Length: 303
Image (cartoon, rainbow, N blue to C red):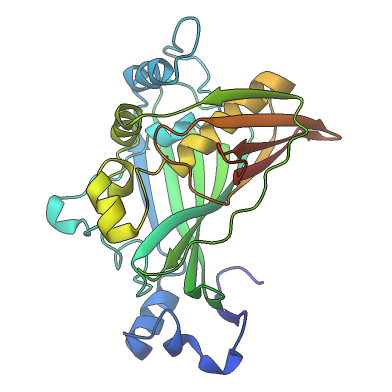
């Protein structure tokens, strides 16, 4: 697909058109809004306060001293920086910033983190000013088996001292409120190494605070059940990805590319196995839920 294009694709019923999927309620106005969002950008600067890295170090229960000023930031820890603060009146019922600003209004209320990729050229350094430039790269509307879907892909570029040190692509998926859950997929069981861990409600609240993530599925159990239809609090997708990137860095000593995809939610207090297996050019990793389902899969390459 060419870059910077609004696309319409269909798993079935191609004659329905975008107006009958994510644009059902807003019609042409909503479609135009989605299309015009492509290329919208924003820029956020951050002094990269060492105390945040120290707080995450403790939250994760890592051994040894926390990384400090001028130390390299561990992989994926950049998510605790470059916050997007908004006023309460500019947040939606789900706790996220309202769509229609930087992120387009897709007409679908249920947002989840779908997938992403990070490409590291050099580590970000703690305590040094950094800049994050974000661009809405693509918007894609689909009709899937579970109903209408919209995918919004963001492109992020991180710089320090005028040099690009990290690039990231992030894809968000929007679904209708009553969209059914997907059938679970079995996770592999041939890992070389694994770490088991569960996150309680306190850990999820603290990670939400560190990432300035207001999404209520991570801390409001009643909202989870009554509005989003989840049985319990949902563990953050970025937290799962962070666990896998850190496991990968320890296992193979670093990487250049890291691709990951969210498959199924992991819930609070549920023990999961964070698994890794060496591959020809790096390592494959995944998160396996307590019932054996695949929650996230990832692939790291060293060159």
